[in-house]
Length: 177
Image (cartoon, rainbow, N blue to C red; front, side, top):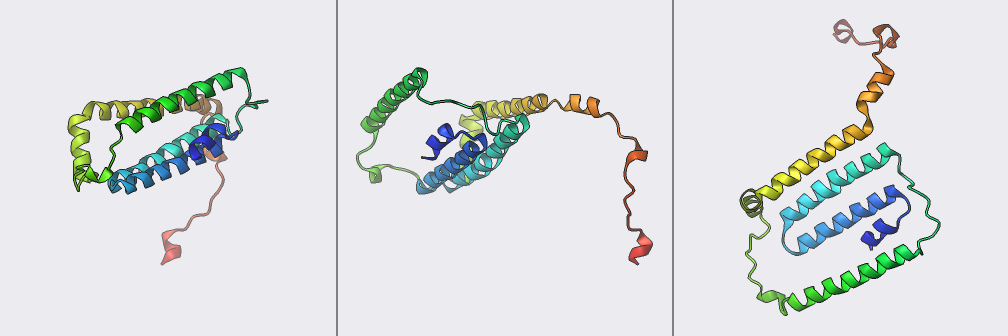
């Protein structure tokens, strides 16, 4: 339900908060699968950092309320909804056909979601994907800096002369002792 609320919420901030709820529920699924470390990473990285980054960009661009949409029932949206329903049906059928009959027969190691196994997998089998994700996050940070126009704002404001700063009383060492 939270994922549907992310899509259909008219307020972008509410959509980001529903996304946060979705990430926390996903962490709960990881806990049910005995992958406590991955659940903790889900909460820290996605629910913490990524949602805060999304909220920062929303506030920076001033897109809190988004564009006004007169109605959702347009032919284009109905076509997309129909295609989504077909894709969901196909994906559900594929999962149902390949899902094991009895989950207790799966041979899952007891340390499946441990820190050591996740670290070994990340830095051996998935090192290229790990590095690509790092570069993608770096590009995102650079994009936020460019979109915010921090150089332009510094040039518009200009340097602040020292004589314009307010007089702030400060405590001297003699006043303390």
